Every structure is written in structure tokens, then in C-alpha cells.
Length: 353
Image 1 (cartoon, one colour):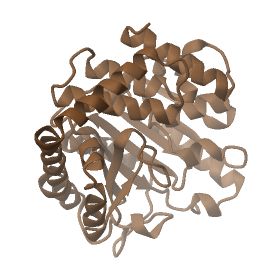
Image 2 (tube, rainbow, N blue to C red):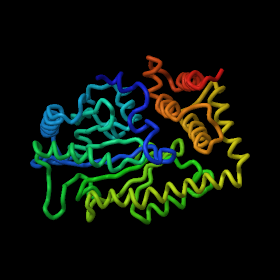
Image 3 (cartoon, helix red, strand yellow):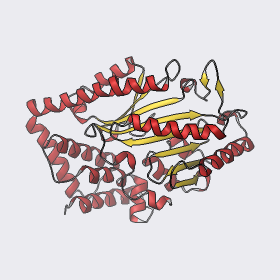
Image 4 (cartoon, helix red, strand yellow):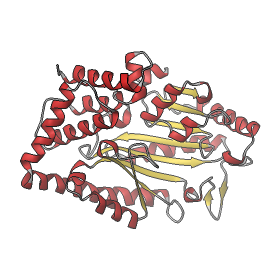
């Protein structure tokens, strides 16, 4: 398996299936782990970082975590490949940026259900992804991976504090539960700020498409827990499965019904304008393309439009982004050239002129 194989089509988190997939795009569970006897990444010297990398690589690649696992040395990878992995949510933007002074890598399952980042903020960042609302399945898989690795690797652990991590907010279980949600109706009705305030009151983080510091492009929001100390992994998971996410799903459904009752013509206009632009535009920026795809997605889920399937939209959500677009065309392009190529891609995939 190569990065060329990974770049084809949508990944696991964009399959467009799973429970509540009309609102919940994907579920992610992530564990932060560090090796005992080594300083945290930001305190370690190059030799120590390399030793951590080699120890982790040996155990990740020799234990059968998946049928086929790709190991990518990020220091040896061109910028476009690192950006492609960011766009697919397989590595963080931080891991993609800092490669010169710190040996870094990522192990990726062939089906993209898991990715293990090495020498990011922590020695290990293990994440499992699922399409739709499948936190339970994601947790079961990551727990199995964690158990396998912990048999061979000595993780830094305190009887008092739990797993020790570089950032204090991850100390304890080291678990981050995150759900990617498509919330266009809440945005259109002006209710999204209420959701953000309620989430903060519950000590949750609301971030954009690419996590911390990013914008909610395409009306996509990541909801995640902010602290890991004082709750077990299962308690954190239960909060999301039974209370937090179901409530936000209900809010989005209510907002969609309100649009249908009170602003049906305006909704239709927004959906069909988006469809027309995607099928006819000659120049498209990334942000604009993602927003238009969001409105078409809303049209599908409110039965206003039925000319495209969700999987095609999900593939376009990835393929319209800079690194994917250049991989598809097989050439590096200037931003201006990408805007033209992006519009061409939309018309080709959606049947426009």
C-alpha cells in the first residue's frame, strides 16, 4: 500500500454511512500515550526522539494491528503528501509542519480506520475513525490496539494521575472523543452560537474542520471533550453517546424542520443555487466549494434534491482540497490554476457543462 492508494476516493470517516450519518459525519476516539523513561517530545533531544520512533515503529509494524499497515516517515515525505494526510484527517497539522528537527512518522491502516502518529505532541497519538455515530465501535478497536501495544511498550503512568501526557488537559485517561457534525441548518437559523455556548458550559471544545484553530468550513464542526482527568474512558464515551451528541442531532433536525416550515423557498433557492454553481462555475476556491457542497448535502437530507449521492459529495469534499486536487491532476499547480481545476472537477463529477 502507498500514499497513491490512500489518495483514491473517500476515507473511512467519509463513507457516508453509519447511524445518524445525515448529521454525524464521523466518530473518532484518540489516545495519548508516552513511553516511560523518555522526556516528552518537546523536551527530548534528537537521539531520544529517534529512539522513541524506532521503539514505536518496531511494535506497531510487527504486531498485527491490521491486515495491511503503511508506515510513512514524514521527514522524508514531500509537503504535498503531508498535506494530503492532513486533509484525510490521518495526521494533525502540527505533525505535518514540524519535521526537520524531530523524527516523525505515522502508521495508517489500509482501510484508514486507524492512524498512529509518532512524536507529535506526545510519543504516541493513536486514533480510530468511523463513519457516522459509531463511538462504541471506535472505542472497542482503539482499546484493543492500546492493549496490544502496552504489552510491549512501557507507557508512562502514575497511580495518582493516570497516563502522563505533554499537555495537562490530556492527563488521566489520555482519551479524546470527537464527533464531526454537519450543522448547516443551525448555522442558517442563527442557532449555532447557542450550541457553542452550551458546549463550552459542558466543558466541550467546538472546533472547525481541521481541529484546533481551524474554521468550520462547509458547516462542519468537531465536538470533543476538553479534559480527561476525573472520568473513566467509558464515562467520557457514555456522556457523548447518551447525552451530548443526541441533543445536538435533535437541535439540527429541529432547525431543518423550521427551515422547511418557515423558509421553504429560501432553502430551495440556496440548495439549487449551490447545485447550479457547482455544475457551471469555471473558477472555484476551496472554501466556496466546501460551502456549496454543504448546501447540496442539506438539500439531499431535506429531500429537496436527489441528483447526486452522499458518497460522491464526500469524495468531492476531499478531492477539492489543494493536495488532493494536485494528486488527481498529477501536477503541482498555483492557487489560480487550482481554482480552475477545482471547478472543472466539480463539473466532471456532477455532470455539469
